Image 1 (cartoon, one colour):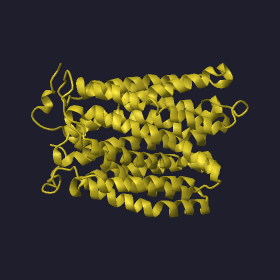
Image 2 (tube, helix red, strand yellow):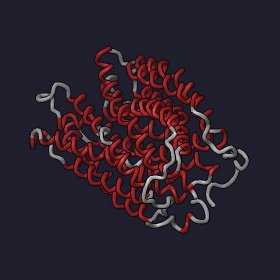
Image 3 (tube, rainbow, N blue to C red):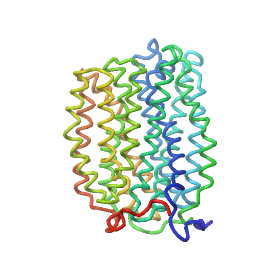
Length: 429
């Protein structure tokens, strides 16, 4: 077993170096989330209407299947990160994601190989879920351990910020492809091109991660430390609330096409707005949580979201324009960044280091699997059952009520002096 690398035996890593963790994280989330933005085209490819009663719902259900194996990946790869080190776990999850996305992009359509096409699609989505389930725990643990105590907020903000980079990249690529290609070409091969772009950068991500120093001493067995059950229970509620909000916002591209009847290329602007505003405001949320604490930043944002979600959806359904859709996506993404970012930081801080990777991975993956994987399917189903395009707003509001209540009950985890006495200290040393 190897010990912690020499670069971390004498201090913490500067932020510019741990950004390498975020680059790999962005590539993994790009590969996983791109499916959501091309769900209509993938539905046409693998679930044609002449053989399936509802192509879009079948495609969204397959998107949700990718969440089923996330807890298993969190358990296996997350615990591997506690035993062997954070870096080996991150390399494993990234390699599996690269294999899965390659297979998904190259799977023949239903018209070519019949039911074997949807079956292979499901299998590759399951492998994607397993890989991504094992990504968040080790990478977040790495960021916490590489950060000075008064900079943990901005370091861990890279976790969400790079996920948002993935959203923005998927939106830009989706906009470009849907603008340049005909609907038939987008169905036939355009969506595959978006996945293959992710495949092309997998070798770069592997090279970057191999060069990272290790932050955790490898161990042969459990430490015997007790799991903080109160933190786990409240964390599940908070993560469930946050992930429902995230996937409702990510649904806006499909929502624009399916419910508001906005052209595909214009609807992709919602994804661009989501990614751009989340990237800009996620790090600010991390900085403010270092300055004022995780609890007040998240709680204030949660209350603001509760007040604005329904009026925002009413506005966009009345106007039914691309600009209104962009405003909805941008506004919700901005406030949601302040709500969700400090939650992950608080959970990572509250868990003992010896179990941080595995426990955080499993906690995150379970909540995401149950609530994130079902969110877009449930939203579309609710719209169909109620006949109301306001259904996503009501669903997100219900999740926020639970999340805000849990945030009130969860104690502050930031170090007492985090960011308060040395707020102007440079980020890198």
